[in-house]
Length: 234
Ligand code: NAP
Image (cartoon, rainbow, N blue to C red; front, side, top):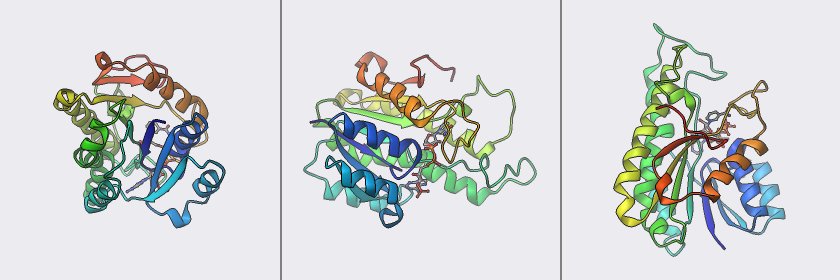
């Protein structure tokens, strides 16, 4: 039974990943920062015995290390770095140029960018001893230079562009250990972050990304792909 480790598994795409992988027979290590408030995840875990819930705030490096240590005898086939925040692009309002919130920018980088690097550092051994050895980050097309024709969203765009750079380097540096890397854009999805106008459901987005993960070969490592499998511009 393969094992998937998911961050931000209490709602949105993370919760849907947990649901689909559990239904498919995977063992699911579902992490979230406040398990006591994760009612939907708790209900899912009560139905699906493959799911175990673990507390993890991805901005807390010591907590990442401690969880890696607690799970030191576990092999992780797929490490899904999903947790993210919208920074200046979400409901908190795009304050825009002239009003940039540099404290919030730091926090956005901690969660959207640095957490993926820290997870790779802390869980490298767990991945290396698994069968599939794959790390996936949920990025955004908003991190693409080639696609940016509307400006704005400085915090979110820069954090996802930097995440792409981190994942690209990981794909090269982890290759000797047989660990692959995928950088996936989930589409514009109807979640709390994507809002009600999103073009697709979490079910559609996650099914698409799981199909990419299923057919992954080492030649794909380091690619930046849309949820439908098409290549995206950096
Ligand atoms: P969402 O519904 O807003 O869910 C975000 C998840 O991240 C929540 O589980 C949240 O947990 C978690 N999270 C935030 N900060 C965290 C922290 N410090 N530690 C642990 N967990 C934390 O967003 P989503 O739509 O599912 O997005 C998932 C990923 O896809 C994100 O990386 C996002 O940037 C990316 N994405 C989404 C879209 C879209 O249209 N939805 C488009 C492009 C990219 P709490 O409940 O504790 O806050």
